Image (cartoon, rainbow, N blue to C red; front, side, top):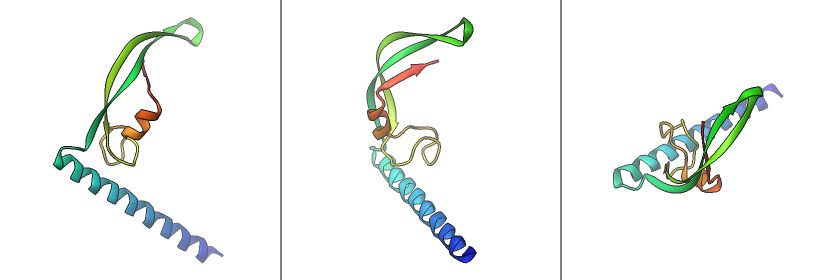
Amino acid sequence: MARILARAAMWLLLVAGAVWASDWLIWQGRVIAGGGYGVVSVDRFVVASLKGNKEEYYPDGRVEVRCTRSLLPEGLPQAGGKPCWWVERNPVYFDR
């Protein structure tokens, strides 16, 4: 049973590494071609801390957010950029 679990874990890590590497290579190709980044318009709210661990939200209009045209989320291959598919599905930006 341990051998089966060890092999399954090995294959899972191998597939995850292949997905990460292919996403990074495709994204790098897009950056070189000039299409690795996109811009999405989102609603911005400024968050003010209050007493008693409470917060107050102030709308601040719409703002353009730079995002990456990739599969994986921030920090993995794109050095902190959020993927455009995630920003489009979460169109509210909170500035703390």
